[in-house]
Image 1: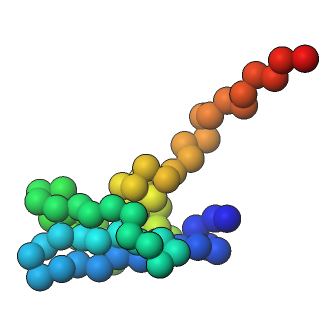
Image 2: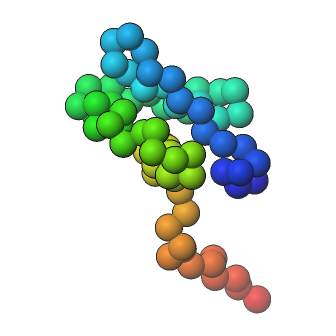
Length: 72
């Protein structure tokens, strides 16, 4: 399941926190200076927002993972 099939959602609260959810479940909350920085970067394009939210939550493949060694 990719970001196109199951995108992240976010909501900014009155006190400046960013609530990030995916699939109807809250994944993480960003607060303080990190939330201010995130809010300033959000809203450029949906693809960029999705990549940014994936990075913030740690749910991001960097492309440098190696496959597990299989013992035969």
